[in-house]
Length: 301
Image 1 (cartoon, rainbow, N blue to C red):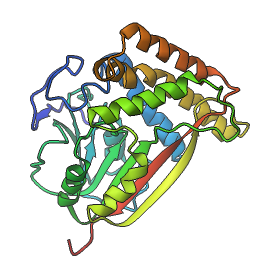
Image 2 (cartoon, rainbow, N blue to C red):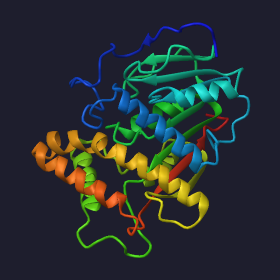
Image 3 (cartoon, helix red, strand yellow):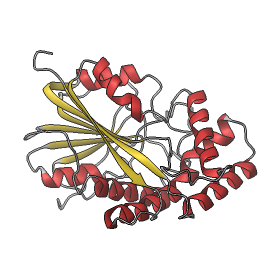
């Protein structure tokens, strides 16, 4: 790690505390308090879970010696820092709406306060653009994918990782009236109504292809949401998946339920509580799907 502090840069938006509702903030209804310590711990917990899913791999795209790398929605910056540690010659830029990243970072990392929905104005193109857990953040998906395409070097790669917002069991173990299924349905309804759908994962491949990417690959991983499986690895995934889900219930739903659907806070909190009870019930063999989609900008583009 570099023995220096790196100041945050300001991109298209001024710095602000995202726990305060700001009209221009794209994500203001999705996450309630993204700057508090608990939320930052939740983001790092998701990072750990996603590494477990991918057997410790930070990415699946077949990149080779990338020069410039962009991490969109960098959060605490943990992915960008890990990537920079593994790729000493790469220049890694992480962007997010507020500077919650650490100041002590590898010398080849810098963070910019920026809104990924605004027009991009970076000084040079990238060899790899990485996006993770950003469903619900964009109103115009076509514009966003086009910006990714335009700001990649020829033969550069885009990778998007996302959890699907459809929860399943293979043995019909959900109770007839599941609070967790109701919560997920209402979350999807609210995000659609807000114009920033969270159920994006199954659409990413098509959107990437429509933007002109080639060699598009999609891999889907099964992730238990509690430690119900007998298989050792899947049980470990279930332990972490359960913890991540429980920590995410309020963060992903409370503002949507109250500000978009008009639910009373007490009603929303009760649904969140009951959904958590479902998640803790090992007799419900629930799981989610984790999508990893990669695509390459053609050499001739």
